[in-house]
Image (cartoon, rainbow, N blue to C red; front, side, top):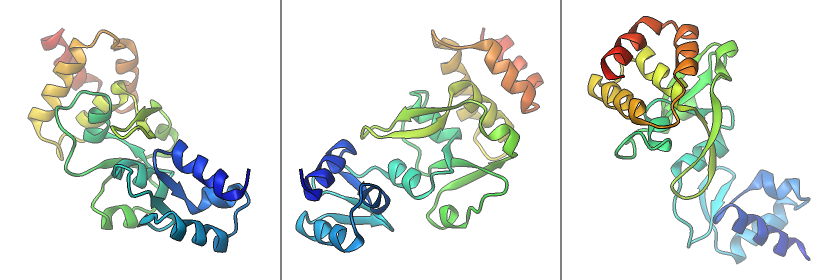
Length: 197
């Protein structure tokens, strides 16, 4: 198997996407990768990220590739977990407070920040509609994030997401309350749940 075949395998495995760093990881030089991009007529999506002409555009995957430290959260996490009716017009991510957000903000992403000791809480993976795995917070953490950021999010969106959560079979109320305590929104979450459960 030659390097072109290996790159083709990577491209197929990533649903039509390939990055410069992935090519380097399998021992392909930048020059050779440039030749591969030209021969396969790949489209540059953003710096270091290319897609085949028959691939579906996946904005979330591109953000995750460009900013591997970001975690999809808030309205975007709701959508990924099937708790929102439509895809958000603006993606939302969470970063550690020490991380730079300027590139994400410039590209129109809503950025939230959290202390490093709370950053990993509820971290999991979800699949985008185009089939790529991205980092996201679980539903319990997402509910707490929405309530915590309630000044920046429509009340109706928070209410409908908590209603949807209350209807879920696989909800984990003890975990929700643990996160609520960690993020200092326990009283508000309890009030919502008393009405809905």
